[in-house]
Length: 514
Image (tube, rainbow, N blue to C red):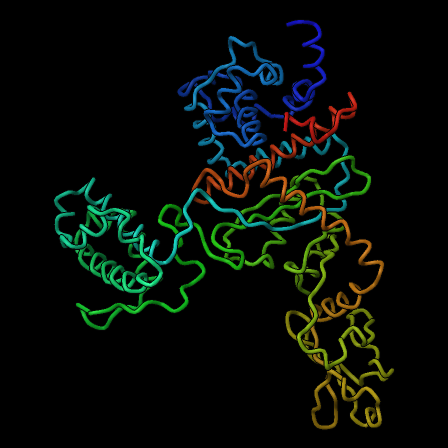
């Protein structure tokens, strides 16, 4: 290679990846996949894993990634491989992905390598931020009629291929609708769709009933999807041969959304999956890294995801962060308290109540070893407390005689009980109320500004790394793909920082050519 060209190559991302990125991939963790029976790996493990990572950096297909490995001098230099040895086959990439699927869908690879990145870059992890984003696997987004038609067609096509004699038992008219005239029945105009949907519901009922008596059909996964569709969408008729099948007014959010990916669910952001992303956001860091990435159903609330994310953050960083920023989707008194027990303050704003006619509980003064009410907003102390704070409400009892003439009586959140006014509360109620007061302060608003930065990370994932719509289906492969993309983003940022530091290049243009 000409000296000038070599100099430019050594000032590119490839040099920093070769020196600092490649050694971070732990080959020892793959040792258990190779033994005397399976033999030794025919390619460098770091080389193949790096190809999988660079594939996600550039959002390439397998074919495109293998072509880059074959001909791209930057890839040869980055992976420390001679041009004549820079070759592998698609089967090798597939085999490594299969191994990673059995390795907790790539979670260990992401967590261990990210932990090494954090240590190598000396990043501070005491302050982090969290957000969720919706993704879609490699499926078509179907209408209700399209869902019926595709599920029926898939079953009949599989039945004709595997059990042709059994398929002949389906009514001729039904086979003509879904096999001989494929696609016709789903391509209905909006005015015709309800009529065709009624027919499709009848067809599902007929097929589920007819083939329930045949064991070969019952063992087919396509029949299981058809039966699931029937259960999710249809109201079982009271007679054996109904003239019409009633449809569910509001199918469950966990109902079948696509026969191509039965794991897809429906949530307020649409069909697909939700990805939880946590990243560092300390002002002293030169760049930030993703510390946790989890995938769950689109129908599952962010409320229940904070603890699994925090578990992964602790595995990656070695300790829980001091501050975790999030949006209102994660906000609840219970979450604030649960995270606080792990040594983390959850900085999330809590939405105001629809009705604000009562004073917030935060206006009461709490104290003492059991965090009981010391005095009300008017300065009156309760005579006693009852109840337990182990998951149940505590009652603070105020003599009603003390409340006569109080100017706040119309706004008081207490309830009248004989000779007392009673305030009922839990620890979560207190945390919620205190946060509603705290979030209005300039200090909280200034501290919480860093949270919005994770929106740029979500955008980077989708624009540069293809997170918006994946090339895979089913939840195990979706989780592996998302974790590889997260690891790719982390390595890209690490290499970009090293390149910019060493040669003064722009980090945005220094990262693996992105």
